[in-house]
Amino acid sequence: METRHKEMYFVLAVIPLIVMIAAMLVTIVLFDGSPHIPLILGTSVSAFIAWTRGYRWKELEESMYKGIRLALPAVAIIMMVGLTIGAWIGGGIVATMIYYGLKIITPSLFLVAIAIICAIVSLAIGSSWSTMGTIGVAAMGIGMSMGISAPMVAGAIISGAYFGDKMSPLSDTTNLASGLTETNLFEHIGHMLYTTVPAFMITLVIYWFFGRDFGSKEMDKGTIDQTMSVMQDSFFISPWLLLVPVAVIFLVMRKVPALPALFFGIILGFLCQILMQGGNIGDAVNTLQTGYSIDTGNKWLMAFLIAEGLNR
Image 1 (cartoon, rainbow, N blue to C red):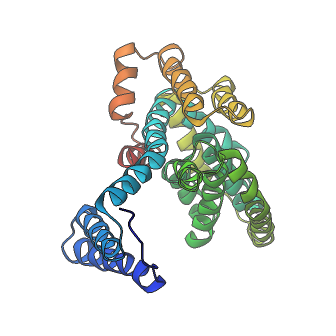
Image 2 (image 1 turned 180 degrees about the vertical axis):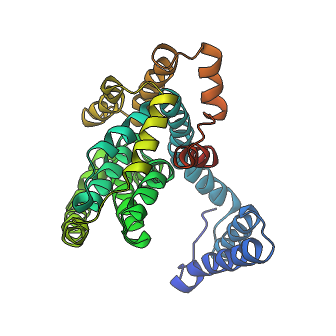
């Protein structure tokens, strides 16, 4: 017997979302709990409303399984990104990117340079949060030492990190959006170019305009030199290490799927920690599993290592 579905009104469709948001506010803000129960509550309300509109449980179950299948690639990418960042920090790749980024920064172009550097790193690793938790932490300290307001520096960091994240085929959210809408990944990115690139270009012009006011300010060379010195003491810094993100970006440009491209970057980071940083295989394996940690004695360098541990 064929089930006749009743029309689903917009008001009914919004009710589960409202219930879920309200439950999250109560659970997270008042009780400092996790969002899992509110998510289950929202799903239950949604299923009940669908049932009242003529949908059978088998149909609802199949729809939920379909949604899970579509989201699985993004879940796999999230796990791979965690491995990538751990391998790249252990291999000295992240430290090398920050080291050479600090060398080219000037006060008048600080905001523009930071936005571009964060965009490139985020594009290479597909994670805005990891970019903000590594390069962003160091950039905040350097920018504030030059007298640039913290909100302005944070804006440049977030602008670059979010731009690179949205444009990266390695990004979990980008893959999730294309997967749930059953759209080709690179076609999805191509459509985003029409709005995201002009917005980022306008942002860079604005940061260049405001950055001119800081051209006469002196950089805190002490903080920068100390950070760069500690990086050299803690890692082997070499331009050759920059070939790792370049290789991943090249694979992305060749439209290699996200998981193989990330896996290739993980292998390169793993080998860099062994061959270029002097680590052993056991250390490199533990880095992939639990993240990389080191006591450098420098608060900015320690900040991004700790932030990466929290991100993972």
